[in-house]
Amino acid sequence: MATIESAAGVVVTPSERGGMRAPLRVLFLGFLALVVLYPLWEIARISFLNPVEVNAADARFWPPTFRAYVEAWTGVSFPRYFINSVVVTLAVTLGSTVTAILAAYAFARAEFRGRDLLFLAVIGTLMIPNHITLIPNYLTFARFNLLNTFVCLIVPFLASGFSVFFLRQHMLTIPRALDESARMDGASTGMILRTIIVPLSWPAIAVVALFAFMGQWNEFIWPLLATTSDDMRTIQIGLRYLLRDQEGALPDWPLVMAGTMITLVPLLIAYAVAERHLIRGITMGSFR
Image 1 (cartoon, rainbow, N blue to C red):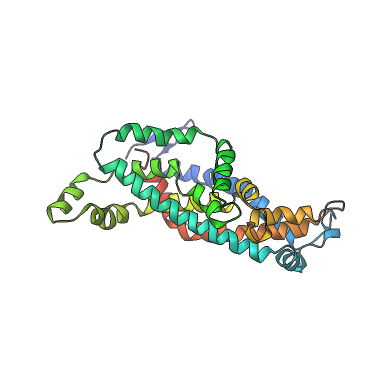
Image 2 (cartoon, rainbow, N blue to C red):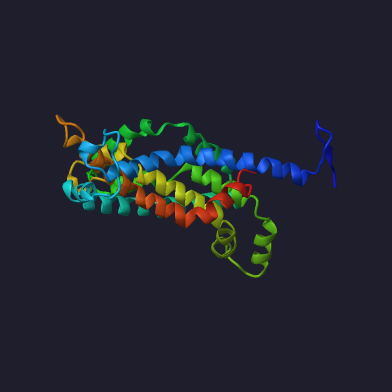
């Protein structure tokens, strides 16, 4: 085993050096965890306070009060906004993931004229800021009288250049010999996709689905622009309503923080479900 002599003349093995670094690594990771988790802790703590206690130096969140959660849920049609967001987010996540799988498979495996040029066009969409497409999308849906519907909330997000690129790069790492062996056994293109490519791509698919879920759940500008009635608003707009209804008075921060905690629950559940595949999908060489 290779060794190294320290400045003090002590011979140290690599495992020992790793042992010396381990506490520093733990401290560094612990510090990063505190930086990430502290805002969440503050949101949760404030949500259990009364409004007059927010700025008090000796405010304690225990025993907690659930007044803010009750008022946030019942005050501004939050259940309706929540259901709208769940419907739109699940539809976009499923739809964009399916279109990304089909497009990525075509770009990774199919041979057709102009394939590379078309793929470059897909990559080029990543350079276009989303806000540039707001007005064209609005005019298009207005022309077809589809504003203020689930269609206009879902359709613009059913295709993602990043998802296609990410899955295509992963599918290129799957040996073509598997496809050829399956074709020799009589498998069709669709069967190869369902039985070979998709099962071997689950970690990358989970990453794409999770990103789509998070992006759509947090979407604010397009639902605000494309909907006008409370029946079609999403939960991010409802969160803004919690502040709007308090104009002219001191903000009820526990109420706003309680609404924020409610909006975070689906994201935490989605992360817990996909976490097992998330790290593997990102680190398994998808950008090879």
